[in-house]
Image (cartoon, rainbow, N blue to C red; front, side, top):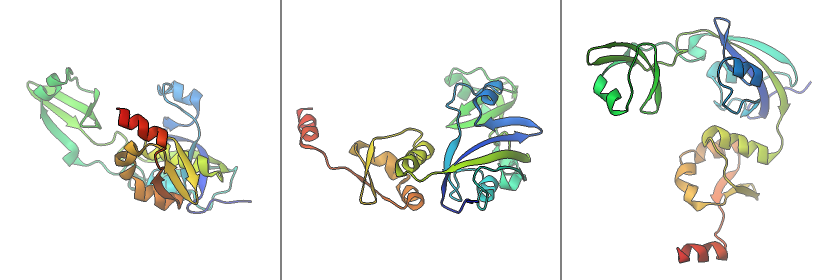
Length: 219
């Protein structure tokens, strides 16, 4: 039976639980039940051993058989980490008012690109917890490795989904991934080294065609 090796690109389906409650899943029906039906829920493609999943989940993939189902249990240090008291902050209510927010205890908000939970509101002070909601919890995963990915285009798109959260037009030439739009250099540059390390291909940008240059000059 074929097994997973470090660096293999594989498609997996899974569900993650804590206290027997599903918090993440690749099954659309289960996702709808927990309120994430508005997302693109489907099995995911990852590169095993390259930190595209939780540490303990990622490490468990090596040696697993294609097509077989598994269950794993993760302690906090291998999942979302322990709770950090330094991540509980007292903020001025003015910060929320400036964002047109009315803070209420129990509410989850986004501040500085981080999700946080409001613990209490008293006068002009708001106590906010920036810990991951699953920090300190033991996690269980049920998962199945559906198939191994061999198509380079599918591998590249899986990395685009992971690093960029969107897909850009590209071509493959002589072990190089050539992105079409040079304006993407700042975005792609942030992840270029890791992208190349996982994929084993060089990242570059295609030369502009004469038509593109003419259009740019007109503008």
